[in-house]
Image 1: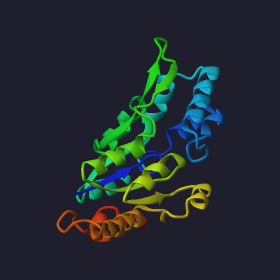
Image 2: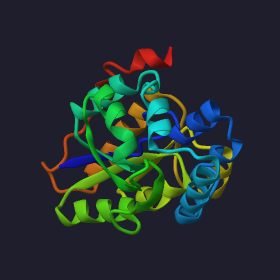
Image 3: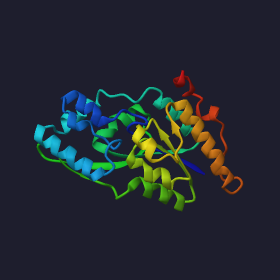
Length: 228
């Protein structure tokens, strides 16, 4: 049985922090996991910036309320869900992501929580577990699932490495250069084809009857038009 594990920001939705930076004019908030490998270092920096500028959870949620999934993302996700189980593994927070999950058709999301003060300030964050993406894939392997994963950033690399097959989607050049072992895709039609090719490779390593082999057109039924 196959499970597809996807990153959220940069793969299915725009980067939340970049949108917050654009709305507030605070350039320091433009830094993401595409730029900074150490997630705790990045989050501590963000928390400090929010505190210095008096930006609270309501300000961030007002930005998110106006965001939409990336063009073609929901169609791709729906077609992928016809072929496999899908889990979103993200380093975002439930306090951010809920409105966007509704716009994506409520896929399963594993992510973290924020600590919000009585005054609405973002005081801290709580990881679900250290290295959650990799450990989620490892747990799925322990349940005898095969896993294909897709992401775009430094914080996705351990997930892609742990999976039976890993795919980069619209990564920055620095990530491409540092991790050339992963195929790179830049649109949903190509990502659908990469999933199909990966499934074929995974199925060859599986016992007969444990994996359904799909063609790229099966994955791209609704998303292929995005490539045009």
